[in-house]
Image 1 (cartoon, one colour):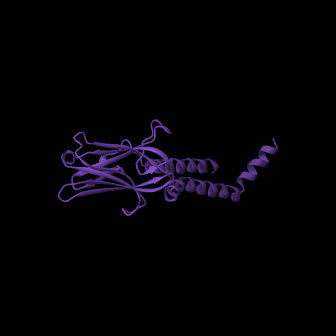
Image 2 (tube, rainbow, N blue to C red):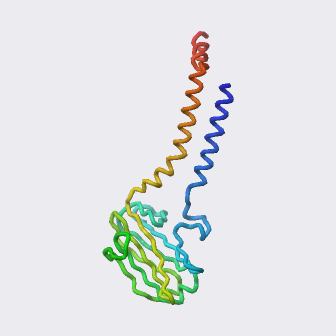
Amino acid sequence: MVRRSIQTVLVCCGLIGAVSASNVQAHGAVPLEEDVCVRQIGENMVHLSAYQPQHDQTGQYCTEIPIAGETYLVIDLIDPALRNMPVSLKVYRGATPEGETIAQVNADYYPNGVINGLERLDQGLYSLLVTAEGVPPLNYHYQLRVEMVDYAKMARQAVGPAIVLLVLSWLIFKLVQSGRISKWFRTRKNR
């Protein structure tokens, strides 16, 4: 019985670990259609990357920027059609365009498909608006969270370990309730 219970616990832990691992959203090796940093209107796509080499040489971020400070923002114009029309960039504080403008890049052509700039972002919420001035204009919106705790994300990450803890607690409770553990300790003590 104890052996079967241990096997059950191990199988449950393995399954929960596999499910939790599959829910992790990676930024690097995902298809463009599933990348959280890609915005798409029709066939036109743009991609945002944020870097803070002074804090992490290899870190690449999107909408969750871990530390306030100097941040390199890089917009990749994925669709070649966007490279043949003027594109502008605006970063403003808050969630709406009425917020304070932090940075603005006037409309220009980017034949290499890359718009980049260095901005100082303090803690808080920012919005980034990429506008391709076609007919009609295409607006790509990103909401940036700088040095902010995402409680919903933390709760999602805690679900797997909480389930494992509950299952283990239940199994231990059942073992104690069956009397097998106290019996096992008594046999060990009498040896």
